[in-house]
Length: 317
Image (cartoon, rainbow, N blue to C red; front, side, top):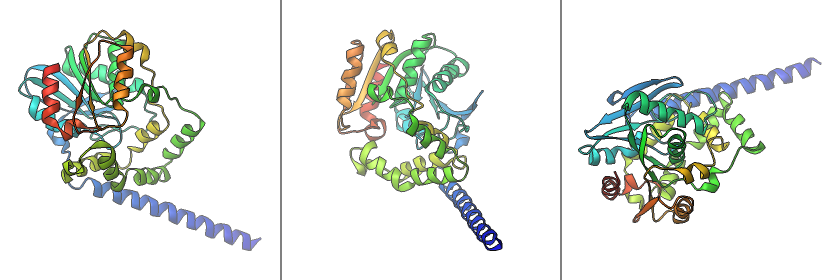
């Protein structure tokens, strides 16, 4: 019996040692990732929202335009920095970091489409204070559609950049996705899994394969900024990633899209696989939606071809 107790003691000590080692490694990764201070939170302001502080930058003069980045742990308002320079003489620009991203709060909750719909509506009401145009990328486009459908008081024209396919938005959590979310939310272990998934190697792959058509357009400072955004607040980005992987952020927007009264447009990278078909599926539901392709770009044309995107935006808004 004493031999069994000794074995159990050794196993427990090994587990505790491994657990402690993971904790130390997680701390080192989180701390080293933000050393360059690319995002510089002191350059903006914070909106004190009920679910945590929301970082935003206000620049320019003219009619208000809210810029919303795509939704993933790497994302932040950095996505729009080149557009800000090109539009600030024509619009008052509000560029935000969504909850769970960049410099904003990253609470340990299940993130849902409704959470972002509510946050966008509250931000426009409390910070901008008047009806505003909105440009949003990827999954974030669905939040804007739902916000305009729920209450058209504060949202005017809507421009979507590479919106997510309607089929993808129709996917809901299942047992497998729920299990993935549970694992990601575990203390220490979930953080370690998050750091493996949000590592620099995976970011570089995403940038070269999906975000940009021409990898030579990717600047080192941009990579540093995206990597930094994923590691603010010591791995708390895992809760957003868990919700994304678990399909908790999807919502069927077909009905709202069909009833939308706002002037709506889509910009899409013509080198992004199947995006033209995605745009056509949106236009099939709402024939009033206009669209334009940005040549030789993929997911982030506002970073890869900012002059062309800015020109289209000025034309649309």
